[in-house]
Length: 64
Image 1 (cartoon, rainbow, N blue to C red):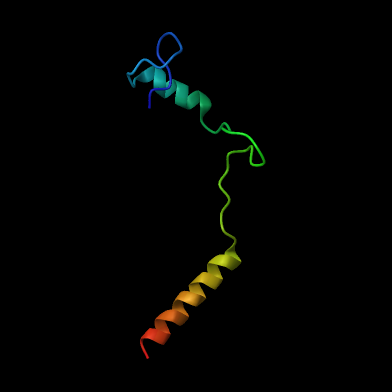
Image 2: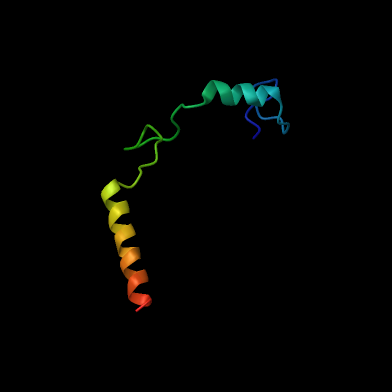
């Protein structure tokens, strides 16, 4: 993506300046609000286990 050009504004060309822009900003948070770290919440292990068990139950019921 075109992050910056020689003048500091996007110039329509993806080059080494854009790579350096990405390296300089990698890991920084974007956005604001309650989740200001920019992280994506992941489902808990319990939710994954319940979903897996429910899927297995549905598969076993269909094969009977």
